[in-house]
Image (cartoon, rainbow, N blue to C red; front, side, top):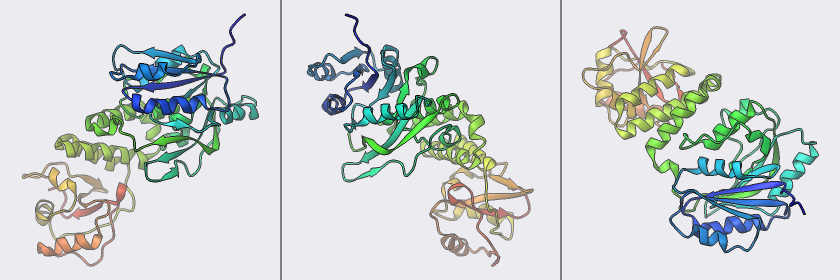
Length: 367
């Protein structure tokens, strides 16, 4: 008798999470929709992951092991290539599904006569103290323009037609944003449908090796992501500027002021809003302000003696320097200026950039 192929292939990648893995596996086995296979990809674990998996007596579970740790994207790709179902669904090994996770996804495909390619839902975020919904609202259909500025599709909630992976897989070079990158690329070809109901639980309190603990990985992920999606990001200048600002901020934290300054300047070139002026009597005092006034924003660290050129930002031929960042009250900035003996004109407005950073007009052109 010919064995029937499962409708859904569930893929769980795991690396050294044996203590959490049983919960994830059990949440799949407890699904109200039972026509699935479960592919557990062990990404080179050194704990008892294999023992935990084989402790479940269910012939729908397939265990695949990498000889070495290759990362979450590679583990998911291994599972995709091994999958034999019509649809592919994902679950992280430290998270869990609610009982109707698969059923609701398949029902959505059926309701829409299989005219869409990817179904996703809301998800519950559990930080160990409280629970909340991840999305306030979702989007359906051609969601390309929405995805570029926000990753609506949490990987634990996605059910994807297997054929969508014929020539699109997770990018194994990305240390972060792998799922976001995948959905953006898929959105150029395929249609999405949103289920306005949480069907998974995302545990953010678990002790997982988090990518965001590695600062260099964050920089690498952002720069690769920007390079891959530059054309789309350029259409959303405010968001693009905030990404560039984040890279510059991280470089500053690492002490790499040259690269930090480069990205911060670029963030300003990409997007600026509501420019206005805080004017000082002359450029010499503007220079002293950036060097001497304490706690007026991280960019003062980027202005050595003699001052670097070109200035931070130019607008209509006038040059500006940053004197504050998000959350720094304008009244405090004015007070700092006054304490070092500078006279500021009474007529001024706020010069705003991404994250409400404050800037000052340098009189007399370039320093």
